Image (cartoon, rainbow, N blue to C red; front, top):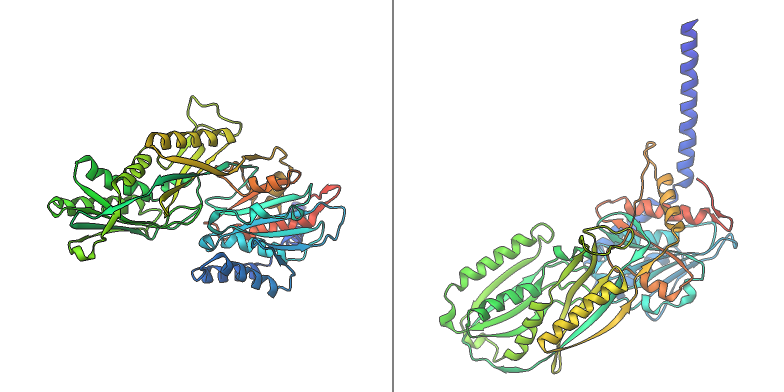
Length: 489
């Protein structure tokens, strides 16, 4: 009798497990909405072609071509924003707006982000209307976002901004941001030195300013360190042909300049510059293995420039760089720390980005961000003080306020859906709710439509499936929203 009961129990357990398995399989099949092949094809083609892009127009044409292949209608406005609108199958449901920036200089890094938006914009959905916007962001100068027509972000719409980064999280905050232009009087003079040392730094991968600035090679610090070495030893020197690899509102990608000295001051030069090269390579080996520093000594005067930058201009520049360095700022014990932030979190960043000459003025461009407008303004005032001490002028522009969405329903819904529709082998997958420690396009979007509910999903560049999972999450979110609220999973 006992054996019979055991057999019966075993059979019942098998039936139950089979039934649960069938339900789980049906549930996953029903919620697995992303076309992985389509997603992967777009992503791989983008990565492959990205090295040939010379402008945002090239990347825009790629996105337009891929969208047209899926027989999806789109419009491209005069600012390069690509807009795809899908009408609602449920007119009572709120609109969902999905936004991603496109910048040809970071196309490969942003491949998952752009593939996510492409898949969302070309997939069939039910529920409310869907507006997908590829926002033109060449050189991270936000020209597209600043000029989006507000009609593309309806009042009371749910806006999901997607970007790439170091880890996966959902955020309801964005730093404030502002730009500074340091104006240095630019004059030249004749060369008096007979020997040149040409310094070159190349191969730096550019990116948008963020809390990871401490990992970025600092070309301005390299320049300042070398010049200070000669200045502090009271050695006569001149500077010529400064060229910084400018990338707009992004990190510089290269540096080149010539420091000129008299031949009798070349003692220990090789040893010093070998040390600088070794120091640079060692400091950047982990995160920037392709970054290279080199130097060459030019003794043939016919190969030296006849005109150099005046000592006065160089003094202005090096004084400012010495006072006001690239940096991130973190909360300490004595700081009044905002809610949801902690000691050690970044509250502001300050980044030197561009150096160029226009007529009789040398311009040094800087980007400053802060967790609130007040923190940003504090650092920008420090920049003004540094400029005043150096005896030069500074102006500010492109000020965008910090953003904090106190309504967490959208982010919570997305996190819940992510966990439910992307489960594997009954293992729960969670998306952490975090705070951005950087400026994002959310701040600009909020200025365009104050009545929109906006959140940010940051993808993990190291997780190849992150974009697919997030795409699946967004599609399930769109399909599951009605006027009465989000349907349960």
